[in-house]
Image 1 (spheres, helix red, strand yellow):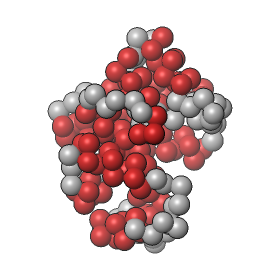
Image 2 (cartoon, rainbow, N blue to C red):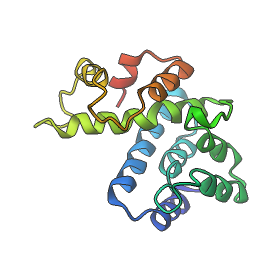
Image 3 (tube, one colour):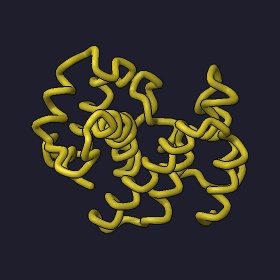
Image 4 (cartoon, rainbow, N blue to C red):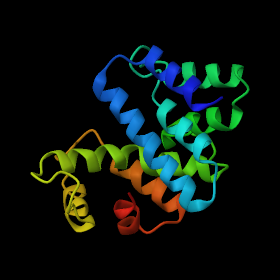
Length: 166
């Protein structure tokens, strides 16, 4: 699958602008990590943009619809990573791609939310500020902090460095 095909799937499955933006943002973060780690940037980007592709239309079946679609297309590695992006689904984390998606998904949303309340947005947003907000369970209450930390631990990255990675 190439980026154009992946973007067509994303556009077909998601209408909500916020969810669409989240998926694209996770895709960009994943692509950047792939470049840093010497992995395939296209594969990581596609994994990022499609990880929540079925959430809007099939929330009770998420991520099974997109995972099956990807498997039918022969994209097993991407499908597996997406099937594992929540620890409570009890899917094994076999690859760095699996672990990175878990580490990046929720934290990306959290950092964007932290940036949105600042006049300078992302510019000058420090890890110290993000970590302070991260400790406040009322700030972006929907972000499951334990999921972020599980991904960070599995990836073997320092939390502060992970926050600062852009």
